[in-house]
Structure formats: C-alpha cells, structure tokens
Image 1 (tube, rainbow, N blue to C red):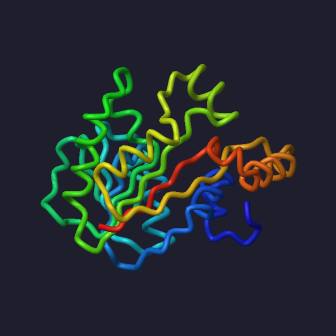
Image 2: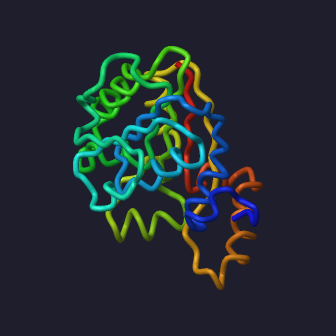
Length: 211
C-alpha cells in the first residue's frame, strides 16, 4: 500500500487494488458497477473519481443504502436493465466466475460479456478484474476452501478476446494481509510481479477494453 494513496481510507486491500489497476477515468462520466456487492468499489468511483455510478447485483447488500450517490438496481448480468450504449464505463470485480459457478459454461460467460458490450458506449471502456485460479495464495484459500471457481489466466483472456477486439491485459498481486506481516508480503508481491515465469500465477487478471 502506498503511504500517500488517495484510496488509503478504504483499507490496505482496496487501496492496493485501485492503485494497481491504475484506471484513467474522466470525472462526471457514467459507470455501471455490475455485481457491486457491498458497494465499496462504487463508493470509491463516486468519491475518488467523481463518477455518476449505477450499481447492480442480484441481491441488495445492507451497506448499499449507506453509499451516498449510488443508484442501485437488482438485476443479473444476462439481462442488464439499461439501454444500448448507456454507460461510459462498465466495471466488474470478481463477478464473471460466479455467473455459472457450477458448470462454468463458456457460452454463458460469453453471453454475459455480450451484455457488457451492449450497454457500454462506443468509445467507452469495459473494465474486468478477476481472481486467478492458480495463484499460490488464492488457490488453497479461495478455490479449495471457499469453492470459488476462479478462471485460469488463459481462459480469462480467451473469452474476453472472443467478444472484444481492443483489449489491454495486465496482471498484478494484491491480497488482504495481516498488518504485522505487511512488509514481508510486499516483498513477496514484488518478487511475484517481476519474476517472468510467475506472472501467469499473479492474483488478479485485469482487462481494460475499449469499445
């Protein structure tokens, strides 16, 4: 976590993620946060980026009402309740692997991606962040213990490229760490991100797509 991070007040984990995504977003534009959960990502987009944010999820978290300025709607990714070209930005954080958790049908994943493409304006961006299945920390904790069906990096990139043409893929390491071990894990992160053979196992795969 950077000492002077503008995201520091949201905690080490969120601060690390938003710093490493390095998003270049224009103030006042409309963003749809799909699978917004507790709304913390939406809150960051509202407060730190100055965006007009719409949140969407299949359930309404109890924290949603505490996010000032967030316009929330219950809905799923296969039928996004907005018109074509409605948003400048569409954002998903750890959503795609949940939409067909048991079967992991590529056809269903692509159907979801096509909906993102539909509601994003021409010239806008779709931003997709997904956990990496075989990351050394995620795999035992999130995949084996919590049964999250995270994608392999190659699969993530393949389905994105089947729907979108102009894609910038990046990967990075970010986790929630015990404070007393933070310095140790920051050394671990730098090693993972710089060692070429290990980059395919980095914690997060990011796709920034221009429509």
